[in-house]
Length: 329
Image 1 (cartoon, rainbow, N blue to C red):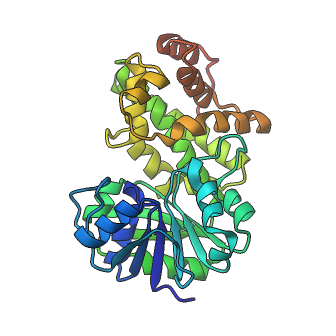
Image 2 (image 1 turned 30 degrees about the horizontal axis):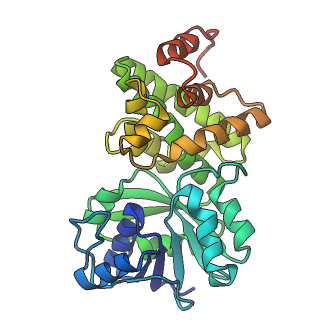
């Protein structure tokens, strides 16, 4: 399969960073943006005027408002709740027979769908891959060392695609558990909200460490119940991404949780200019899925209480601390 030309749909921070990474790997890249003004400035100034403004983009990146039928590989890099609209906007024929790398980390509100399920519904002839792991757009864009997971159904093709995307700083590890990788990426955002809230409420590093450990156990139960593999959770897409998102102030979800822990409501945090936090939309979806599968997920439940604003964080923590003691597996 030809892997020389890439198109990245979505000129946000993550899409811009992935375009830069693909270019660094020697690929010719089209960065697809909806705003003609953004397209014009990228092509003339070699910079994204809105996201990652300080990063000079590679000469092999060209911006466009439409998706060319001639590209070999497509990366979908829009927010999780916008994936369906982006796929429908370009049409199923544009994705037919092509590898489509899904990079959003979230579950669709309302439908409870994973990103690959949305792709299967809107572009059934596309070949799905999932990219996830501990990574921040700013790091990838400027070439800081980053390792991620690329999961697909065919082992040989996935390895070839990972090699085509690998560059001086981005190292994609091929894997075969698409479901586990995309679920881990979505769920870690929910737990990052909780970790940020723990810091925001001043509960201490010990509490945050305990939360991360129990979140890992809870995420493992959820991923396995939803059809993923437990072994995926000990890798980059699981433990690696969970740890990064639950400890770094670069994480949008951590920042959002921090503001909630300090007493803010979802509306107030958004009004104050908070960046998109995928976990806010994913949390109620994850809770609905857990309930439908009969999986005990008290931390996901606690995050939903926090987002609803109906229970104070002190009361949420008190309820978690008085749950029946069990042996640690």
